[in-house]
Length: 314
Image 1 (cartoon, helix red, strand yellow):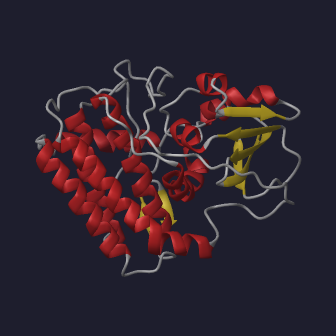
Image 2: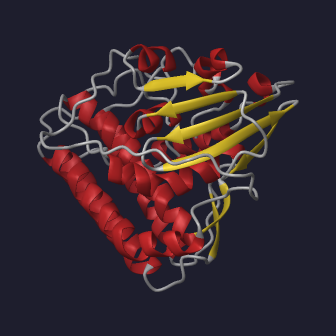
């Protein structure tokens, strides 16, 4: 639901020229764990961690991020400003957030919704169709809608177990991961709106941690089939201080594990905010490596720059 299309029709992967702004006082605390033995396929955080995040930090983060985006919109003097590198304006991105938050709230309440076909391309088509049928572009009205539907989501989700199976625009996932999806979606578009308006974005390490369950769950579902065709390699991803996972391609088929099933060909260590922006197509790998945000080693470290291209930003 957060795939943009550039004016040239290509999937948007933002260049390094897009400035990353952060508010003063934000810090990046980093740790690194030790290598572990191979484990079962990885789909999300372990249940206790997911439950804790969903019932405490995640709902609050959803509400606060919605309010922060609303604050940007209420202070906006020109809603026709284009989102950098995308076809949408600030007002159109905000309208999309209203629609997406409303959809997510309905799903959290147990009401089935049909939106796209579960692929990034299908989501892009559904986004365009829904936006065309929703003409509201007043940023104050849209700000209220973003907040209202975000609160409706947290209220509905709070009445149900985080393990409740839910069908979403990107396929089945539990309700806790759907909350992570909603937060990720708002952070991605909030980043774009902030960049368009020249304001600080709202992404930080703690919020990336809450987005990780969705990002990891979605990874096998957004593989670029053509780019991955015939590809075989084992990548270990270390998101500093947050997560360690292994992504293994076998002749184009991907499997994601919490721990390495075999010796990785390429180990990639990446700063959390950079990982988030790369995953959403808002940052280029080359620039991130040049700035020291991404480090790679192993038997085939040269595979690192091409890793994001194996996926389509959802």
